[in-house]
Image 1: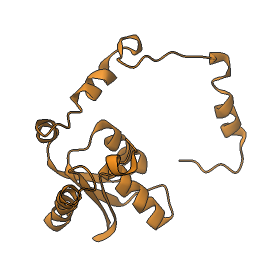
Image 2 (image 1 turned 90 degrees about the vertical axis):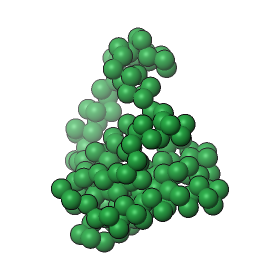
Image 3 (image 1 turned 60 degrees about the vertical axis):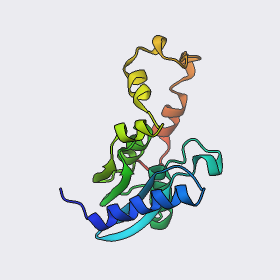
Length: 157
């Protein structure tokens, strides 16, 4: 697997411009298919008051809109920094084929963006996590899945 340095430079430039323009955090992402940029994204968490508006998620949303599809199969993402757990999950859900990154999670932590606690939380038992989780109405929990299985016009993903 070999990436294209020009696309990585573009992701890093997006991240840097996002900071210097005052629009958001130091993260940028570029999604590419067949050597063509499909979409880009920069961190917009504070600009939009949306904690999920990380560069990778923003780029994924833009790419899906541009392609008219929820699947980004055949695409790769260039991101200025190693993806956090949320972004990595979104990359997997979108079915991209590869991730190229420049800065590491340690670099991000040194700048105040430390997501190590999220990895630690995921390893804990439910009852030990910082944000409590409790199952409710278990007897009704599968109703929506039953409806999904019966829905003939569903679009599987």
